[in-house]
Image (cartoon, rainbow over all chains, first blue to last red; front, top):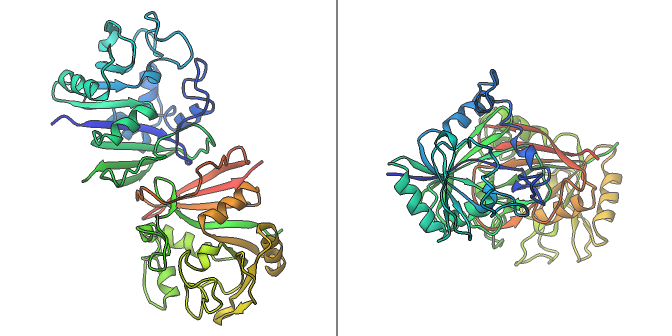
Length: 215
Length: 215
């Protein structure tokens, strides 16, 4: 049974998934890149950049696992392009250059219809204007029995959690205070929605929190 | 130099320091006791209850340290007595029975003037009606050069943080989702106030987060 998963969602100690004032220059918002400091030293990240070496501890192992068994992705509008900027212009093909890191069908939630965009390396961007249920249905059909991963951002993850469609949620809590930004959990009663924390693992540079729908 | 410290402040994964609907029956709010599950197995807690045994790992060590070097305490109104209930009646002497665990002068923020209440074991409750600055001044004077600890609750800790009077803040984040309750950080921009996380330590049953005023 194909699951809907949120994996490696970065969170600050004060609960923000991105900093304030997201823009073309700051896709993760101001100070948002601090949330990714746990990731950059890993062997997994370095290999994605075509670099040798890197750390091979707990953080790396969990990062590697977060890309396995995934047959399709769902992205919110702001994960694909900036709030202010060239998107939804059809010439904008995402943040990642010619070869995005998904290597699978990737469904982008948007209000702007657009033809599918095949990229190098197996990623094809599909643009879904009919909402989160339609995106999930299409992603599951495309995943070939594997799991579907919601890649973010916070607003999209919140919508899927609120609808109780997420099966499991892996948070990476970094030792960082952002002060402002996009909150993941504010106003969202995950407990009432049937979620519980099933495991916490200390990484080298962040704490990994595993939450599952249990009811 | 005497510091103002918040130590062992329990927090859920979704950022709540207490559950909803605090009452005489539920001083920590509904489901709030789940935040203390890390504490009850420790040798330190058991010794406080006059019991032998208990665990002696990281959680216990940090709990023991949180009571050392403290010369006076500050408590919010709800830490001393329930929102709905007998307090501020003078016959209410706190949650703890005849011998409270403070063993030091303890300043309770309240709008109701009341004579000091000396208890067994060295705790004397002083009732401060002039606000947080007055309470801090009196507590520092009473602490004999040792540190002052804010015992809670969340609203009181927030007031001292907002005023940049807290020197360091130790959070104990439990692997629990409360869903609702009293948020510690919501609307409080700790980063802009000059705070940063300086250390994270994995305990057996909770994650210890150390935050200091660095600017």
